[in-house]
Image 1 (spheres, helix red, strand yellow):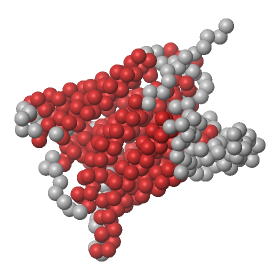
Image 2: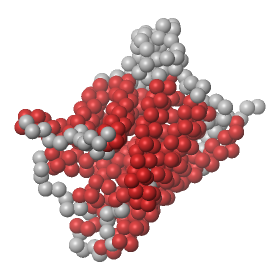
Image 3: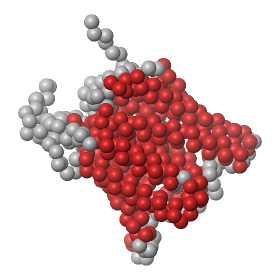
Image 4: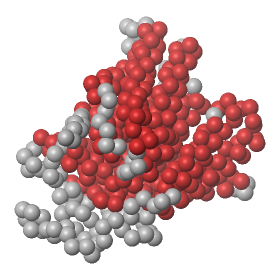
Length: 466
């Protein structure tokens, strides 16, 4: 008799927490700061702290919680093994969210409350970072323990993306530990500002070790169904191992201690490894067959498909849905277009520097093209295509909203990245346009996230999507 495998249901608390932290925290802080920057208004005296908190909320509170919620539901099913410790999930969510809230309040509000001792503020800051690290490390432990006994038996859907998922866990652990240590270093120094060089390194590490690998792994496994791309090629594991090697070498070479010790040769090595990373990412994008199809699609656009059982409507040509998830593909295609732009900007910047020419932009437009353009747009698209099914809903409550989400999201990225690509234009009308783009970019992103939240809430709790 075959034993029935019981999987844990979707924990929607991760998504509501992510949306709350994004709208009230990460995106709200970003919108406030860029508005004031655009119009040369007064900024907080501790601006660097605000920027660090904004980044931490975006990485862990926005993207991170979405990754946690989806992976705890989807990855066990992909590996055909249930979670070993499902009772830990509530503690993972509570620890991560509680730590984020405590650290944010301690660093931004605490110093402005004269009634609280600054030593108490520093203690709460460290406690918040510790709670977040506890939540993250517990999450990593649960998934690694779940997959480890099955690792040698995994010859199916999860095997091609195993190298990417291994990097995801390493990235989570690295970020949690480094962020916790930086919080302790700030307590030692008597400040709410974490060591800047190491904080930047931790952000780059999380982007390269966790955000890109998990985004790519989920794309590889879902795009053949959602967008009728080809199934993963036979060399995907080798690509994954190559990506892991280049990423590890690049992060080791770019560690602040290594850069300080090696000097100019170390800087050149770091830039060379950045170019190699850019090349591998472009290779992976080509292998995904998203923009250019070099292999046959998993499901041919000409294959006969069943009409909708209730309405009789045929599926959309080139897709497996009937339009019940809106134009989610606009978000997915534009996300990877912005990833291509981020990689291109990074490579051009390195090459211009090597040829002795002035680079008109730094890492900011590259980082925003990646985080706001690639990661955020991918979340906005995948959430509205994937989560209704996970919630046992047949469709989005408001499919038409998805197109507006894509429009607001892309305008936000265009305004943010475009305004950071060079100095202010000498012509007043163009300079005003740059400032308007920067000022509105945060509000547009916030609007896109609010539309996502509205659509998911209506889908989860409304009757029209059942």
